[in-house]
Length: 177
Image (cartoon, rainbow, N blue to C red; front, top):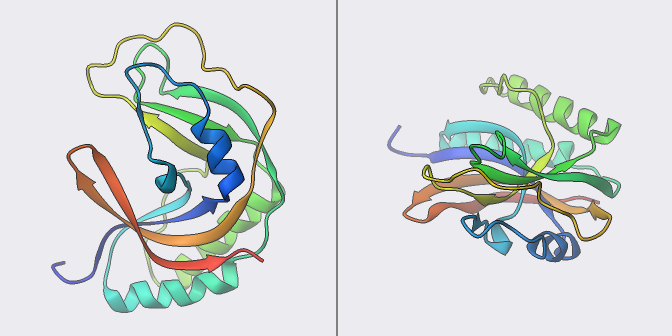
């Protein structure tokens, strides 16, 4: 596909207070922190979209966007593990609201004849990435206090790979009311 939107995904954008708290989480020295404005919670990956399908999806997001309660951040951890870290993530408690949002988004994707991500929804926000040369990290990352995440919008993003990591561009955004 030469025309259209590439590497698309739908995500929740955290509010400024949540971003501030996540930006303050201490990270391992080898970690490359996700830029403040790029922090998000991916709901589903899509891939390439034609402009027409992307616009239809953007319109459908409005019906899928509902307010979400503050959600506890349960842990800061390394994925897949501390021995071979690729990511540092903030995991969030699975809630009925997240289950309902996942269902609404998957239903919208099916209605629009778009591919549905087969992976189970695991609510998390990536805080940092590690290079392939990353070595084992001693100890688990620590949260400085009880943290909760609040989200301000549901966003259709495209991702562009760059030398120092992916950069995300909002194609459509719907406020959570």
